[in-house]
Image (cartoon, rainbow, N blue to C red; front, side):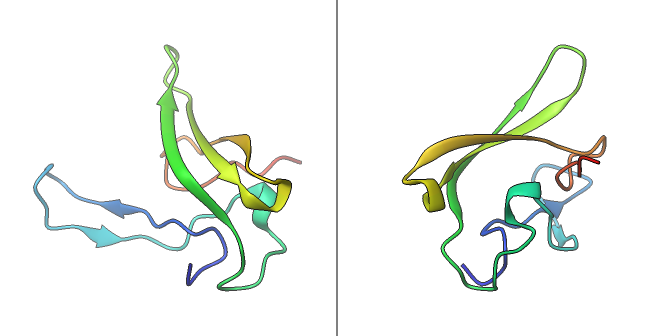
Amino acid sequence: MDNRVAYRVFTSKTPVGLFNEVTEPHLVVYTDMPFAGLNNGDDNTFIDDDGTAYLAFTDWRTKGSITIEKLSADYLTGKLRG
């Protein structure tokens, strides 16, 4: 829990690595969270038939409800609404 969103993203050209960490992902629901705060957990990804990706996670600020956030086209961060 040492970042705002409590998860990290790594990329690689192959499934076995070498892996490189990308910039901390942004999630709309956590844009105002302090570092090392009570964030999310139990992250899971879902990729729809049209290629759109979503991140589903437990939001501990709301007593463990499930939150779903649409990811950016490259799947590396949340897609900020607005």
